[in-house]
Image (tube, rainbow, N blue to C red; front, side, top):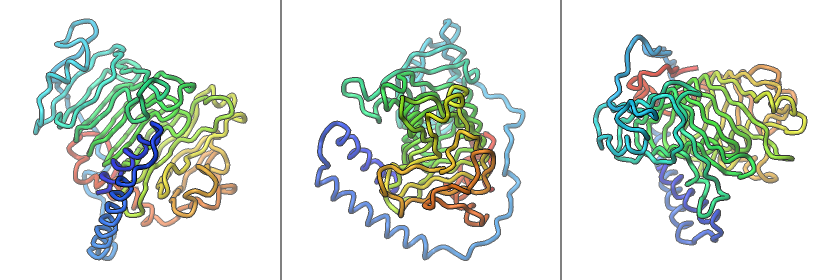
Length: 382
């Protein structure tokens, strides 16, 4: 239901972006969805038991282990695989697979824009490493008939998708405004040792449950955005040089209803900037996030925050919009940008571990139900 409301909001955003007014029928549908969400949330609260101490299961902090991933098909620019481009390999992948199907993408730069469709379940992209296997595109909202949603170099719509050891790029540049490298509109999607490189709106964590571990994410304005329930563990966030007079924001979360079970959680991540930004940091203030939508939720748990993070921490979207309804929190963050002395008063410093646990992989994305099957490293608790 949370995802349905997100899809509806995306339709409205697309109409507005294309120059149309909000449609009355769509607004009526939004009201109906919100009513349903409230009813579901009430039932969920009534069914909840008293909180209990969570014992750490044996599979928490799972390591990759000594196993070999065997590809089903190979993509290679040099002709040494079955296919020379990823689009052709996707066309050959089985639909509605009940087992993992691995596409190995050899080292090379693949200038392709494509979508992984809904029927390609349990698909995995396996590359040769960050900076070696590169998938790149340059669509932006400055192109004819392109919106933020359709600008993605790679769009993931298939549930249970995994990507490992790949760089995803959108090279449109800061001057072309919104330009997405990856958009994820699917459930139980995971990325391991991947790099997402763009400027404004790099990573569109659009909807449903997502997990990112040991990834690098580069951008400028609102560059991790959307309304997914998304966990980021041990990732590096690198703010880049934006356009003149712009301010950087790492996140722009898009929760539109207080009963949606969505939000962004960054755990044990490094919040930093590129050398070029660090050399000009006084000209380009950089913030943890700003509220794209009224009930935005973003938390940073035990993250390192470098000196590029502005002392205020967070930025308004427009005046006092969402400042009374958002939840922006930090839990024992540290580093030169982690001081809480000058934080805006509409953000929250979390000191209660039981409260912070609401934003772990166990709670936010029900990670115990699906992360073990990914064979990726993860932590379910604080």
